Every structure is written in C-alpha cells, then in structure tokens.
Length: 250
Ligand SMILES: Nc1ncnc2c1ncn2[C@@H]1O[C@H](COP(=O)(O)OP(=O)(O)OP(=O)(O)O)[C@@H](O)[C@H]1O
Ligand SMILES: [Mg+2]
Image (cartoon, rainbow, N blue to C red):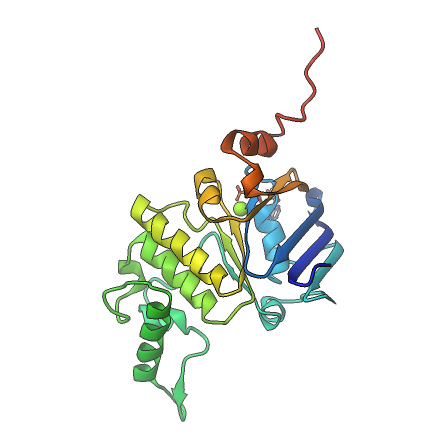
C-alpha cells in the first residue's frame, strides 16, 4: 500500500435480501486527490459510499483506513476515522438557519445554554474559510439556492475536519455558476490534503476536478485510471461497457 493511501476497499460485497448490490468492489483513495466514482444508475456507487461512511454494513471484503483494517458499525465510527460524507439528498433542516445546520448536534454551549453568538461567529468563519457566500448565517436553509444549500452541506462535512470527504452527486441539481463554485470548493478541500470521492453523472465535471476515476458496473469495480488517460468518449464506453461487449457474429 502506497505511503499516502488513505482508504483501500477490497472485494466489498453487500446484498439487500435477494438483490446483490455490491459484488466485489475495489477502490483506492490517496491523500489530496479527487477520485471520481462513476457508473450507471444502480451500479452501486451510493451503496458503496454508505458502507465507507458507516451508514451500511458490508457483508464481505475489507476496508483499510490509514493502513488499519476497520469495520464500521455506525456513521459515528466512520467519523472517528475522519471519514465525512454529504449524501445525495443533503440531509439539512430547511426550517433551521445556516449556523444551526452547520453545528447541528454539536452546538457551542455556555453552561447549559446554547451560545448562539459563538455559533454564528464560528459559522461565519467556517463559511468564509471555504469561500462560501450566504447573505447571513441567520438565513433559513429553505430560503437558499440549491448551490448555497450544497455549499453549506459540504461546509458542515468539512467542519468535522475529515481526511476523507465523500460527495454523492453534489452538482446534479445546480445551475452553471453554482456548479463552478462547488467544483472550486472541491479542489480547495483536496488541496488541503483531504482525499475526496466525487460521485457524479456530469462527466464534464470529472475532467475539471478529478485526478483519477474508478468505474463501477453492476456492483463491480471494472476500471480505474488517471483522468489524463481518458476522454469523454472513452469514459462513456467504460461506464456502459460498450468497449468490452462482444460484437454479435453474423
Ligand atoms: N436499501 C436498499 N434496499 C434494497 N435495495 C437497495 C437499497 N439500496 C440500494 N439498493 C439497490 O442497490 C443497487 C445499487 O443502488 P445504488 O443506489 O448504490 O446505485 P447508484 O450507483 O448510487 O445509482 P444512482 O446513480 O442512480 O444514484 C440498486 O439496484 C438499488 O435498487
Ligand atoms: Mg446513487
């Protein structure tokens, strides 16, 4: 295992009843890189990342983090190993303000009381560190644009100081300018040494921020390559496996 390897997944399997969602997945993540995780709908990307984030337990295979074999019983276990995730559906509270969302469950306190001022000050600091712009940390999440919401969700994950940050389709629902700023945020986080796993169907995003790509197909990892060796056409062929399909004989 290379010196800067953060995570190694080997032969990960996972079934839901009769459905075998993961059939043996390998994946390697190094410090400071952005790894694109791609594959068709239902290929198993989200399931694999839920396993790495402790939200699901795998049936077989091995997870190694910082050269130690681990098994996560809960998201808290994964967080302990500095693995953070922003889920496809964000999991923010629309009715709470920006600062409360950032510090949900670990609000700063003074004695028994919530220290609201400290929380908003820390929130403003966290957001400014990541170049995230919102009008005020007192704004309700529900009032923000999709891009701002995504940025707050990423900022929340980053504020736990992760070594590994998993982003499940962070740009799927965003306008062009918002995509730009989320991609910039991803590069920024990686440049601090965090290993980022980016799931996306927007192939053009991959060419902007990724160093390497892992391709999944029907519950298996089928390819792993530096982005510099790929172009969109080749990537599409890998995702759909049209490059390996046998041509029917006449
Ligand atoms: N909780 C669950 N119970 C039963 N089946 C599940 C569950 N979660 C995922 N699956 C199945 O596992 C397979 C992989 O799903 P997964 O969500 O990991 O795919 P994905 O690659 O993230 O797809 P997408 O690109 O559409 O998000 C699918 O067939 C899905 O129906
Ligand atoms: Mg998914």
